Amino acid sequence: MEDREPEQSRQSRCPGMSYSDLLDLDSREVPAFLRKESQRDMGTAPLSTERYTSPDFMALENEKMWPNVWQFAAREEDFLNPGDHVVYENAGRSYVLVRQDDGDIRAFHNVCLHRGRKLRTKSGFAKELKCPFHGFSWRNDGTLKHIPCQWDFEHLDHDAMALPQLRVERWQGFVMVSENTDIASFSEWAGDALAHFERWRLDECYTVAWIGRVIPANWKATAEAFMEAWHTVATHPQIMGFTGDANTRYDLYGDHVNRAITPSAVLSPHIADKHDQQYILDTLQAFATQGDDDGGPRRKPGARFSDADSQSQTQDDGDPVMARKVTAEANRQMFGEQSGNDFSTVSDSEMTDNFTYNIFPNFAPWGGFIPNIVYRWRPHRDPDHCLMEVRILMRGKPGEPKPKAPPMHLIGEDKPFASASHLIGAGLATVFDQDMANLPYVQEGMKASANRKLELGQYQESRIRHFHETLDKYLQS
Ligand code: FES
Ligand SMILES: [Fe+2]
Image (cartoon, rainbow, N blue to C red; front, top):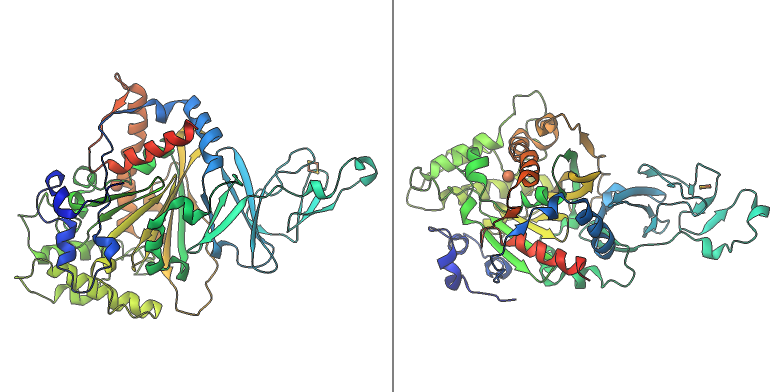
């Protein structure tokens, strides 16, 4: 892994102000891990469309990759009390995570050891894990409790009939599981970049909104639509007034983590010479308040920007980052008040920008101090579909218990994300619907492709190459 200084990598970047330039103009001290670039040459080879369309490739992922990685299975606030459990299913497997009497979490294969019925089909509460078919039951710690007609099962050893367990680790409020009992600890497996989150403390946050939708596209194609920001110019033109799409920084860490940092409250380089700082504040304001007249609460949980009046009152035409400073300050005040935190020393960047980390293979927690998005993508039914989930995390007041997470709001396959605007805000829902307007046709196009190749940008799509390089390591092992 090569860590290059910003100056060395400038030539292969979008002209204009870089992310490092923006950090130099920050009104506060910026953490070193935001400044440091971590890029390496990922080559220029095309990707095969079959990786996204072939049932055989999907079968290989299910066999070689999914059982051997750490997966984000739940948030702590999904199951707070003893006996609460979460059913997490992926890639043909079913797991049940159970909160223990002492607050610990155990995860089991969610399959009856008699004749194989799934033990639980939904998340919820139960005093024991009892199979509805013939009534075999297990205690919540996984030990066998009861076999009906025991006289007919004298050949079974009760200790050996404990439910098989998964590895469980807790990180920043996320509950990670792995089938592979030999896998390195989550922090060792994911590497040093995980430490960035120690500053942002997502364990002090809790889920305020959780939506899911089945997307008619492969899980990787869908995830990759969120791995680069430069499709903004063609797909999301309404956010160019306050999004540094082509100024996004991409960093690669080891095998399992990468990140994009997309600056907000700056003009897209595509329109940088056409507008002033006030235009940024105006377009950001319009985005932040979009849909406020829909009869629901004025501030939606997904809102990442304050709509404080101060945004339209401050003018300093000489300052090239006036809009960032005003936005950051408004966010410091609003989110500081909301969460009882003092953000006065926190950088403009961390109060404004989009830190989208991806943890291999399908988990994307955002960093920073404003409400954070968390994505998860899972294969669904066949290579042509996936389940995409979006959570919004808000910071809780220090010392106060976290409220239980709302259940996932599953949007019908025939419905737009806009139908969940009341949960995530109209601005964000519009962005997702714009992405969804591409994805079905990406999948159809890849299947119709004459050369069966995808050609990637060398820098802006480096995270996609990084992901596939790691995927290949699993598939070839
Ligand atoms: S399959 Fe579970 S008790 Fe028979
Ligand atoms: Fe997008």
